[in-house]
Image 1 (tube, rainbow, N blue to C red):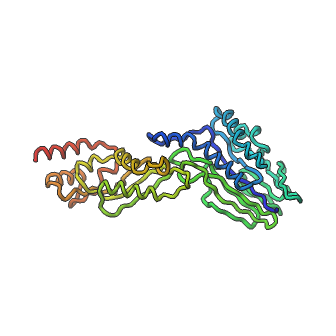
Image 2: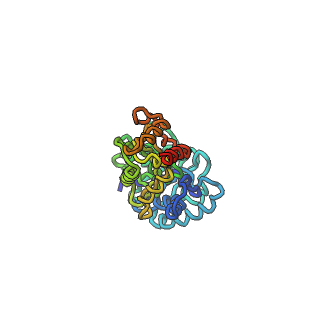
Amino acid sequence: MSTIRFVHTDYFRLGTPLSGIAQPPTWLQQLATASVRQAVRNVLETAIAQRVHFLLIAGSVCDCGDHEDSAAQWLDEQLVPVRRAGIRIVTAVDGHGTTANAQGIGDLLLGRGESLQCTVTTDGRVQLETSRQGLVRNADLSVTIGQSSVAAQTTQLVYNAVPALQPGTVQERTSDHGWLSQSAGAVQSINSSETGDRGCMVVNADVTARHLSSHFVVTNPIRFASEHLDLVSTTTTDRLVADITNASRSLQRTAEQTVVVDWTVQSRLTGNPAELLQLDEAGLLTRLRNQLESGHQGIWPRRIQLTGQTGVVTDPAARPAEQEYVDVVTGADGGYPRQSLLHTFGGNHEELVAGLQLLHRVA
């Protein structure tokens, strides 16, 4: 055996709640409440399944000092099967101080300026020790934290973990020159500004071939996404809901993952003028969620916004007075609006609707 295998993760974020999921149903609220802890469990399960030699936690375990003790106690309980599998826990001091209760959680603690030295013994075991001298030439692999470069030429392999909330953009990486530097990111995003998957890195260091490789493993039960849908043809509100539903279902996700998505839509809507002018985000979201919520997991639309290029085309059966009224209030030219009334979603359209109702009564 000449391969050293380990899992690299940055921030566990225990004690940090998810935010920005407006008016979630019970199933989604429960999922959001448990998502960070489930993401941590997914990391630990990955370490066991991959039969790694050690787990490297390069960032902090807990973001909030008030939750450090309870987070450490919970994590220590979760680590029992990991240690039973012979996997050692390595924690590190990050840029904000020591990881939460790191000395109690980890089997080895890397202080500032220290590196982890990994050596494969003649009987195939992997020995771990810390060093203050940086690279140790008789070790097979050196793991450093938060450094941007490697000193001097060395015959050993070097892996540089750079703690960050955002993972790297490349999900699989290889290196034949003996050095690899990357971020694993947080195990779970906590709001809609953090789009995309979160997870951990599984790293393989072949000390005989002097080859390093890594691949990203998704751990987040909830993924935030921001998507755009361009509907080139004129459509009704019913067709709009159906198109967004189909596009939502086509979003990529893992089997156990729920995607919380913000949609931006460009379209041309046609129909009854009064109905179109009353169209709002809440109404569209309600209809869309009713289509997608079956199964209590999968896709949850958080926002829907129509772009400024979205147009309103009145129903051909509309009375001339209604057509003229809509043309005036939308700034239309030849029956087609230059700018949609709907792109501001949530604006006050009561006056416009009242005008149309008045026309009905007068007619």
